[in-house]
Amino acid sequence: MSSLLKEEMQKRLFWPEGQTLKDFIEIEEPVQCRHFLCVTVLKNKEVQLSVVQCRKRQSSRKKKTKQTFLLDSYQKIEVWHLQDLALLDGRNPDIDDPCFLMHFTTVRFVRAVSCAAKYSLARSLVALSSSHCQSPLTLKNFDQNYIQSADNFFDHGDCIVLTRVCFYALNLVWLSMCPAP
Image: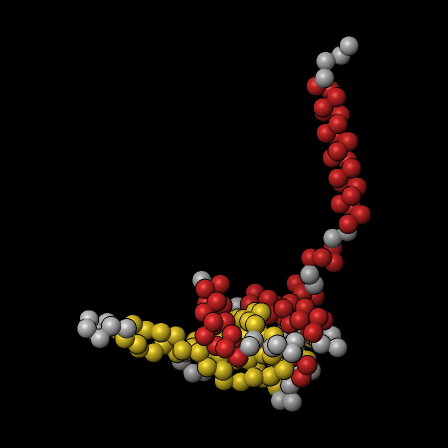
């Protein structure tokens, strides 16, 4: 479902503006419609964060049958640049809290639909900040075990040793199956 939603937002809202949607999460806002916090990369490699509002609107396709159906309409409500994000504050890493604060020139309170969505966005922002911005993203009150990528724990030397051990064991099995002279 989320990949279809991402594809639709990309096609209707971001592609015409020359942007690529990298990640998004659903957030809760006081207005009664769906809202998303989207992370996009512009043609000049700048990273933008935007709050997108999704509303249902009626549309008719055939006038003879008078069929009507609902279409999603997407509109950007707020837009910031990632380089302007001074601090991403997870508020309290010890409890399952989907809320976080984004510190720009003002502080923006965000309530994600889940704590997993909050950490997913934080991982995406850290990765994009390291690849597109000159300075790393400052995080506060996030559990670093969930932010770090799995690549930090992967050692290629261990993989080579494991491959050699498996190859040696396979050779022993193969030799044991050969008839003795």
